[in-house]
Amino acid sequence: MSRPSFSTPATATHPSTRSPGRSRAQCLWHDGYTAAVEEIAHHLDYRGPHIVDLARGIAHDGELTPAILDLARGASFDPQDLKKVWHYIARFGTRA
Image (cartoon, rainbow, N blue to C red; front, side, top):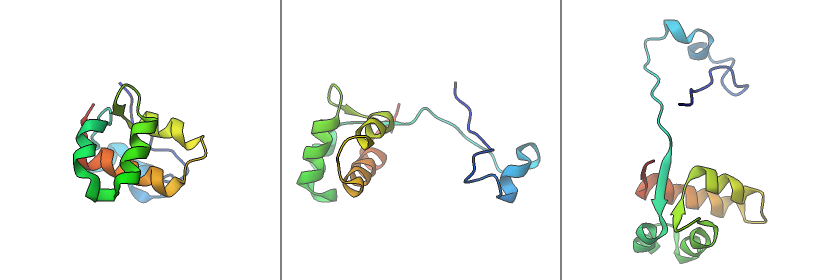
């Protein structure tokens, strides 16, 4: 199982990440989200039909995950459109 990193440059200077063992906040981890293209297709009005079409084009076996979305970043898609696909995954997906 993967563990979150407390030493990434984006969080390294935040006081809550300097000493995770002393923090009162609980850090929870899960394996991410997955969303079926057929499920998000029922919500065309959420981010628009063109975003659902994009999701269909980048999905693997009808499924979308953050890892699949990350692979799509290397292609020539508009980053804002990929962000909207992520919104679908987060809103209508389930934990993997």
